[in-house]
Image 1 (cartoon, rainbow, N blue to C red):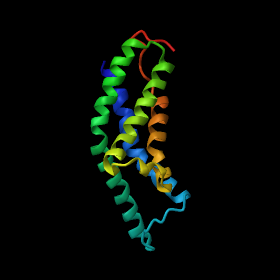
Image 2 (spheres, helix red, strand yellow):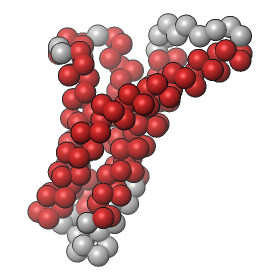
Image 3 (cartoon, rainbow, N blue to C red):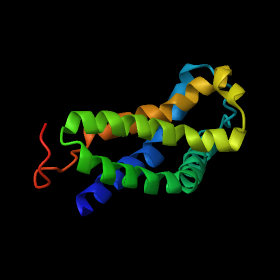
Length: 145
Protein backbone atom coordinates (compact mmCIF):
# COMPACT_ATOMS: atom_id res chain seq x y z
CA UNK A 1 0.00 0.00 0.00
CA UNK A 2 3.01 2.27 -0.30
CA UNK A 3 1.69 3.50 -3.66
CA UNK A 4 -1.45 4.81 -1.91
CA UNK A 5 0.68 6.76 0.57
CA UNK A 6 2.77 8.15 -2.29
CA UNK A 7 -0.39 9.16 -4.15
CA UNK A 8 -1.86 10.89 -1.08
CA UNK A 9 1.42 12.67 -0.40
CA UNK A 10 1.64 13.90 -3.99
CA UNK A 11 -1.90 15.28 -3.86
CA UNK A 12 -1.23 16.89 -0.47
CA UNK A 13 2.10 18.47 -1.39
CA UNK A 14 0.64 19.79 -4.65
CA UNK A 15 -2.19 21.44 -2.72
CA UNK A 16 0.23 22.90 -0.17
CA UNK A 17 2.68 24.30 -2.73
CA UNK A 18 0.44 25.23 -5.67
CA UNK A 19 -2.59 26.34 -3.63
CA UNK A 20 -1.06 29.62 -2.39
CA UNK A 21 0.04 30.54 -5.91
CA UNK A 22 -3.42 29.90 -7.34
CA UNK A 23 -4.93 31.79 -4.38
CA UNK A 24 -2.71 34.77 -5.11
CA UNK A 25 -3.67 34.72 -8.79
CA UNK A 26 -7.37 34.50 -7.92
CA UNK A 27 -7.00 37.44 -5.54
CA UNK A 28 -5.39 39.48 -8.32
CA UNK A 29 -8.25 38.71 -10.70
CA UNK A 30 -10.88 39.43 -8.05
CA UNK A 31 -9.40 42.90 -7.46
CA UNK A 32 -8.62 42.13 -3.85
CA UNK A 33 -6.47 44.77 -2.24
CA UNK A 34 -2.95 43.40 -2.10
CA UNK A 35 -0.52 45.80 -0.49
CA UNK A 36 2.89 45.07 -1.94
CA UNK A 37 5.69 47.57 -2.14
CA UNK A 38 6.23 49.64 -5.27
CA UNK A 39 9.92 48.73 -5.26
CA UNK A 40 10.41 45.62 -7.42
CA UNK A 41 12.90 44.00 -5.06
CA UNK A 42 10.75 44.48 -1.97
CA UNK A 43 7.61 43.42 -3.84
CA UNK A 44 9.32 40.18 -4.92
CA UNK A 45 10.52 39.61 -1.37
CA UNK A 46 7.04 40.23 0.03
CA UNK A 47 5.47 37.97 -2.60
CA UNK A 48 7.85 35.10 -1.92
CA UNK A 49 7.45 35.44 1.85
CA UNK A 50 3.66 35.51 1.40
CA UNK A 51 3.74 32.26 -0.59
CA UNK A 52 6.14 30.59 1.89
CA UNK A 53 3.99 31.72 4.81
CA UNK A 54 0.85 30.29 3.18
CA UNK A 55 2.61 27.03 2.28
CA UNK A 56 4.04 26.61 5.79
CA UNK A 57 0.79 27.19 7.63
CA UNK A 58 -1.15 25.30 4.98
CA UNK A 59 1.04 22.28 5.58
CA UNK A 60 0.59 22.53 9.34
CA UNK A 61 -3.18 22.87 9.13
CA UNK A 62 -3.65 20.17 6.53
CA UNK A 63 -1.28 17.55 7.97
CA UNK A 64 -4.07 15.78 9.93
CA UNK A 65 -6.15 15.84 6.76
CA UNK A 66 -3.37 13.97 4.97
CA UNK A 67 -3.74 11.06 7.38
CA UNK A 68 -7.54 11.06 7.07
CA UNK A 69 -7.20 11.29 3.29
CA UNK A 70 -4.86 8.28 3.27
CA UNK A 71 -7.08 6.19 5.53
CA UNK A 72 -10.14 7.01 3.43
CA UNK A 73 -8.34 6.04 0.25
CA UNK A 74 -6.95 2.87 1.82
CA UNK A 75 -10.31 1.59 3.03
CA UNK A 76 -12.34 2.71 0.03
CA UNK A 77 -9.85 1.16 -2.40
CA UNK A 78 -10.65 -2.23 -0.88
CA UNK A 79 -14.36 -1.72 -1.52
CA UNK A 80 -14.33 0.07 -4.88
CA UNK A 81 -12.47 -1.41 -7.83
CA UNK A 82 -13.38 1.25 -10.41
CA UNK A 83 -10.70 3.98 -10.46
CA UNK A 84 -13.04 6.71 -11.70
CA UNK A 85 -15.58 6.01 -9.00
CA UNK A 86 -12.83 5.85 -6.40
CA UNK A 87 -11.32 9.14 -7.56
CA UNK A 88 -14.77 10.75 -7.52
CA UNK A 89 -15.28 9.63 -3.91
CA UNK A 90 -11.81 10.81 -2.97
CA UNK A 91 -12.52 14.19 -4.62
CA UNK A 92 -15.49 14.66 -2.31
CA UNK A 93 -13.43 13.72 0.73
CA UNK A 94 -10.56 15.94 -0.42
CA UNK A 95 -12.83 18.95 -0.81
CA UNK A 96 -14.34 18.38 2.64
CA UNK A 97 -10.89 18.00 4.19
CA UNK A 98 -9.79 21.18 2.44
CA UNK A 99 -12.62 23.22 3.97
CA UNK A 100 -12.22 21.72 7.45
CA UNK A 101 -9.25 23.91 8.50
CA UNK A 102 -11.10 27.03 7.33
CA UNK A 103 -14.14 26.05 9.40
CA UNK A 104 -11.93 25.45 12.42
CA UNK A 105 -10.11 28.76 11.98
CA UNK A 106 -13.08 30.97 11.25
CA UNK A 107 -15.61 29.01 13.36
CA UNK A 108 -18.61 30.08 11.38
CA UNK A 109 -20.45 29.18 8.25
CA UNK A 110 -20.91 32.90 7.46
CA UNK A 111 -17.34 32.84 6.16
CA UNK A 112 -18.64 30.92 3.15
CA UNK A 113 -21.01 33.71 2.16
CA UNK A 114 -18.41 36.47 2.07
CA UNK A 115 -16.95 37.70 -1.22
CA UNK A 116 -13.43 36.96 -0.03
CA UNK A 117 -14.26 33.29 0.18
CA UNK A 118 -14.19 32.95 -3.60
CA UNK A 119 -10.42 33.17 -3.49
CA UNK A 120 -10.21 30.24 -1.11
CA UNK A 121 -11.84 28.02 -3.70
CA UNK A 122 -8.35 27.71 -5.14
CA UNK A 123 -7.43 25.03 -2.62
CA UNK A 124 -10.25 22.58 -3.46
CA UNK A 125 -9.65 23.32 -7.13
CA UNK A 126 -5.99 22.32 -6.79
CA UNK A 127 -6.90 19.22 -4.73
CA UNK A 128 -9.40 18.01 -7.34
CA UNK A 129 -6.97 18.72 -10.18
CA UNK A 130 -4.19 16.82 -8.37
CA UNK A 131 -6.47 13.86 -7.64
CA UNK A 132 -7.30 13.50 -11.32
CA UNK A 133 -3.79 14.33 -12.56
CA UNK A 134 -1.79 11.77 -10.58
CA UNK A 135 -2.02 8.08 -11.35
CA UNK A 136 -3.53 6.03 -8.57
CA UNK A 137 -1.20 3.12 -9.32
CA UNK A 138 -3.68 0.29 -9.08
CA UNK A 139 -2.11 -1.84 -11.80
CA UNK A 140 -1.07 -4.45 -9.24
CA UNK A 141 -3.94 -3.98 -6.81
CA UNK A 142 -6.58 -5.37 -9.15
CA UNK A 143 -8.65 -2.25 -9.64
CA UNK A 144 -9.68 -1.40 -13.16
CA UNK A 145 -10.69 1.70 -14.94
